[in-house]
Image (cartoon, rainbow, N blue to C red; front, side):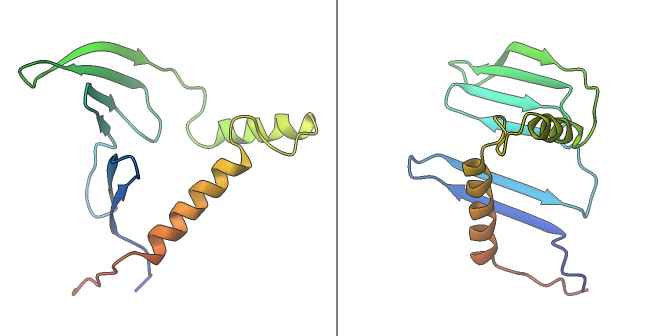
Length: 127
């Protein structure tokens, strides 16, 4: 009724054969964790919205994982503060484009979002 996507699953397939499976939902509790799998191992992020810990694992010959590195972060912010600080600094320095987020990257992201919306299959909840 509100046209809010309660649950979304996105499968991205790139021309080089890499795929990404993304899932998000507001219908249940979540750990907010992210796992990125690759041919040589995986990366675990403890809270994708505001990571405090990232762990790097190597895949072993017996298809198990060994922790090889971990990175802990402390934050002075918990939202868009970094973006605001970056924008303020750009304005003070008379820059019309951020070095940390180029206009071309913003356009790629917006094009991807539009492509997902245009190619999505909407399922109405029967409740």
